[in-house]
Image 1 (cartoon, rainbow, N blue to C red):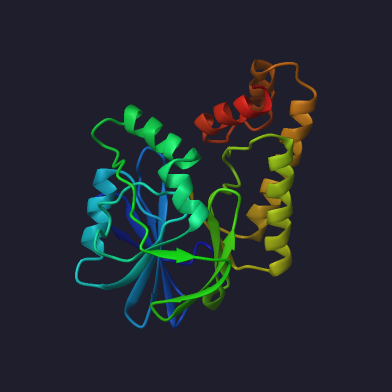
Image 2: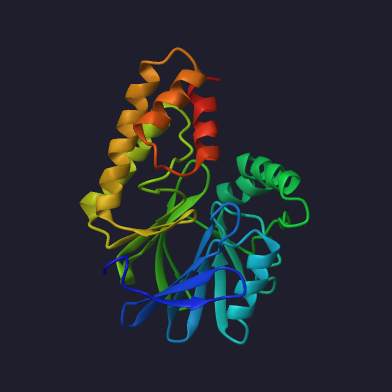
Length: 263
């Protein structure tokens, strides 16, 4: 599956990119919100399962309208626990650690931060989890998913379309990297994706990507570590990273990464 092989539908807020896999359809919602969030809908035999939730009021309303009258079997709330006005009556699925992350962990801290910055636009209400997931296979709406627990939440493998969902990739944008150890873990994860041969890598902050993008991200992470080891402070680090990757977006993520490397 070519990552550019999709049809586009404009919504009241953002747009939907639709990938046809035959028996399964992937609807990739580009919210166009200030955080450039992406939400995925996996459709099979007329039943939908959402992966993640929009968090801004306008994009929640747009996606609710898109799904109005359709059969939604559930929402997998992994890294984005806010936006509970999205499909309020649908079953909500998460691992125990993802639910905790959203309620009182690092996810809750981010929700509070975004709510303060985007006053009146950000839906800070947290999805109530009705079904707790564990490591391994889960059948939801007749669709097979494989849950992989991570330190903060969980990733989702979708075997029927040979795809995997994780929080961040972004081959030409900065990511939140919590130090050298975290960079090494990300590299190992991406190498695993390459070994598995996925057609698409889905993330909640970028359009669907492929294995060439994973290779590009590995090179970025390796250079990030090298730059950090040669810098005396955060200002020097940020300057060097900007110089090495001048066209990269996600400046706010670079700020956060700098804080982790040079706390």
